[in-house]
Image 1 (cartoon, one colour):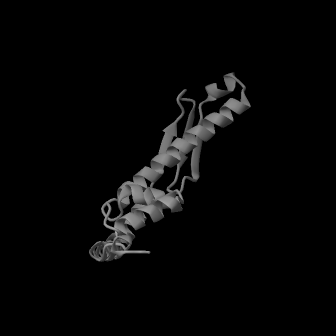
Image 2 (cartoon, one colour):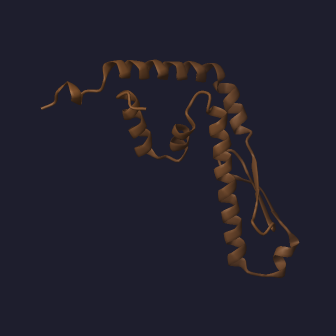
Image 3 (spheres, helix red, strand yellow):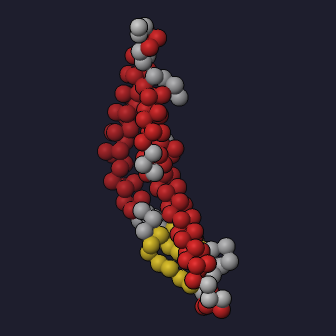
Length: 135
């Protein structure tokens, strides 16, 4: 059956609870300013061929799309669509990185990214590790 070694370390759980309380307090104090900075994030990426420029907002939403007129010299709709999508994905990834940097003083970036990406398995694994004192 379960012995003492099967239970999370109580001291580690208390330390993690203290850490969560500190994180919560910092978020209360600094959160509104961080949130405003995060909402204002915009990232512009240019395609590798330099013909497509995409600007996205904090949530990866398309804010602006610029196409160099030279893109029409080679009418290949599939290539253009793929280039736009790939450039937008790179811009959205950079926007997430910037937002994680903004919140880094309060939330570890890898933990924040897992939340942004909806990676529940990673979030829960980190929570379990922290509760058990494994960092």
